Structure formats: C-alpha cells, structure tokens
Image (cartoon, rainbow, N blue to C red; front, side, top):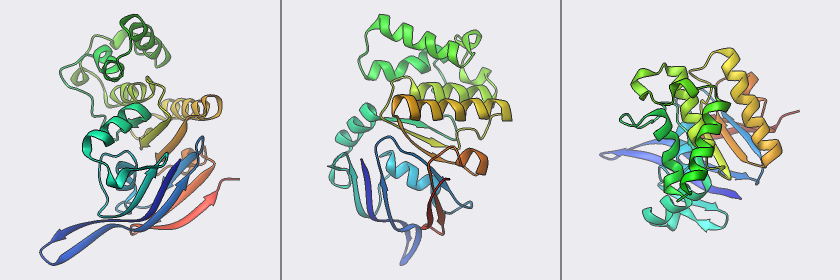
Amino acid sequence: MIQLNNIFKYYTNGFVKTYVLQDVSLAVEEGEFLSIMGPSGAGKSTLLYILGMLDDSNEGEYLFYDNPVHKLNERKKNEIHRLNIGFVFQQYHLIDDLTVYENLETPLLYKKVKSSERKSLVNDMLDRFQIVAKRDLFPSQLSGGQQQLVGIARAIITKPRVILADEPTGNLNSRQGKEIMDLLKKLNEEDGTTIIQVTHNEEWARYAGRIVELLDGRVEKDIAVK
C-alpha cells in the first residue's frame, strides 16, 4: 500500500546540507498498525508529514497505492490525501473560528457528504468522545486534552483508509490515552484501517504489530511486536 524508497530530506544553508532523513526505505501493508519511535530530532514527525503528503522529500520515491506521489502536483496530492488519509496533529490544528461541531463537520464537507449524514456522523463523534457539551465551543475555550480529542475525532470521522497520528496521546491523561489507543486498535482490527503513529510511549507503541525506530534520520530497527 505504501512504499518509500531511499527517501532523503534535508535543508540547505549556503553550501551546507542538514539532513533530517537519510536513505529511508519503508513498506507498509494495508491494514497494518505501525509505531514510529526514536529520540527527539530523529526525523519521526518529518517522516509522518511526508507519508501524509504534507511535506516533500528532496530525493527518493513514494508510492501510495501505486500512485507515484513524488511525481504528482499539489492538486493531485491534496486529492489523494483528502480521500484516503486522516491526520492527527501534535498541535491540534483546529480551525480557531469554527466551533467543535463545525471543526468535525469540515472534512465531511470536503468529501461532499449529504447534510443528514453529516449531522449523524458528527453527533456520533461527539457522543463517542464524550464532548457533546462542548459542541458549540471554540478551540480557545477547550483544554489541551479536549482539543486533542476533537482533533482525533476529526481525523477518523471520514473513515479514512489510513490514519497518521503524531503523538496522539501526548496531551491526554493516562485514562484518556488508553481510551484513544484502544479506539485506534479497534479501528485497525475491526475496520481494517491502516494506522501509523509516532510516539515516545513504549506502552502505546506496543499496541502496534510493528515498531520502526529512527536514529539520526535513519531506520535503526524494524521489529515485529510479539
């Protein structure tokens, strides 16, 4: 489903190249649950953004369902992202001037979901994440944990084929964190959703079937979870 071949990401300052990712090759099968780990600065979030088509590599190939992402224009990449990928951002990325309800509804509008179905799906998410009472509040009126819950609900509301999650439990307490990880596991096992998460938490990492560890922008380990 996903194939990265010899991916390099670097920034140039004069004649100096600073590498974030170096020669990364990675294959992800449909229906996999993959955790990406590594110390700060290892390139985890950059790799996730490239997988989500929100950033580009400088060199290498990226195939998504045989689409050569590295050769596509922005319009085509945006279309593939919109139709296939749900992204959970570490910094929420909620739309400040929209309510919780409207933030959840936005990806459904992009997919041209009918009004009655949108209402049903949004209400289901509000109920599932126990944020019904927050539906008319704006992001600035929510705690960090509540914003994270809304961000996760928004990512999964369209039932994407792939969920990319950047520290999805980073702003949640341990109880909420376990609930979110259980939810991701359920989406993976029951719905067949492919999930790729970046995490520092070893307990949450082991919810996956496979852990890839990055070090200095390179794949250091790629191990199956027993």
